[in-house]
Amino acid sequence: MLRMLRDANDVEVLGYRGEAANEKEDRQWRRWRAFLDDWGIRGDYLLDEVPDIHERLLLGRGFVLTLRNFEFDQQGRATKERPRPMVSATIRDAIGCVASSFRKRGRASPFHVSQRVDGTGSTHPRIRALLKGFERQDPPTKKQKALTPPLLLEIFESARHSPRRWDRQVADLIIGGYSFAMRACEFCKTEKPGQTKTLRVRDIEFRESDYRLIKWDDGKRLRDRAHFVSITFTDQKNGAKMEKRSHSRSGKEVLCPVRAWVSVISRIRREFGASDSTTYLTVCTTREGPLSAPTEIKAKHIIKTIREACGSGGAKRHGINRRNWALDQSDPELRWRLRSNQAYQTDKLWPWGVGGAQPS
Image 1: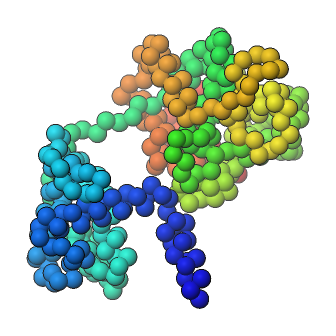
Image 2 (image 1 turned 135 degrees about the horizontal axis):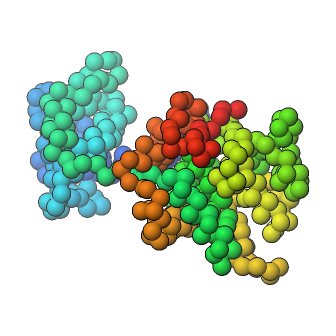
Image 3 (image 1 turned 90 degrees about the vertical axis):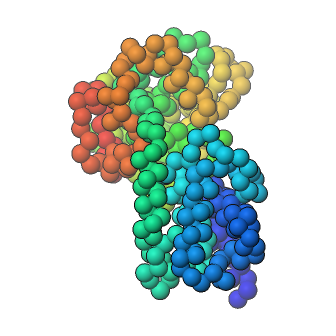
């Protein structure tokens, strides 16, 4: 029984969420403890000896104001006043982490009005009003600018004339990932690996126009007869597993998702003679010749390629501005809509043959 309980605890702590989420909650709990220490409430971090709801609310509001105005060290102690106040969205997330710590220990959160047996409920009106006021005072959100199809053409042309061999693989990965609204961590490795499983060769599937499957190592047939490409996302950040999405040929030579993924797979097979379907999609060679050493494309290389295309005048030349922000595929909700094949047919996407991925 004790062994099973230990395994259950491991799953609850490590399997339920990633390491980054656990660290974030622990960081906010350290700040809460240091805040109570400064107020003279040492050791009673769950407020068992503060039953009065008004006193608990006062502590909750004081903690919110401390988050807003101060910086913190590793131990959670407030060190100095912030040059810019913490934005309301970050504060809301922080008090949510502290409230979660309270509920895990069977206590009611000082930031919420308890409405259920388990102590959960809505945010207290005074806390909600405070956050709403902060939101009005916050500076405007700096939205991430979007990639447009013409900029993808710029990246492809630059890679085609580049002396660096791996630029071609990077360009095809960007175009293929764009078509499926992928985050970089889905097709290449990042500095801090998360729950999302990076795609491998086995996760890419090609079919002919009559839906017959084409083996990934069938070079000539793959290049000439592939009409559909399907990608299986093994494990994602949102918890979805084995999610499969498909694209057909778009009719555009460069921006066609089928062409991009055929190029990625064919290059891996040609340069490495790979027969292992577990090979990552990001392996490539740095130069021509049989003695060229294999290397791996990482997220930082993807970002560098995009920045170089923008810095060379591509951003201004291809119209990356406020009007294009509707195409920002880094937005999780937009990405979900594209994957779910909901209506997202704008004049900027469809003329280039780049639409939402079709569910398989």
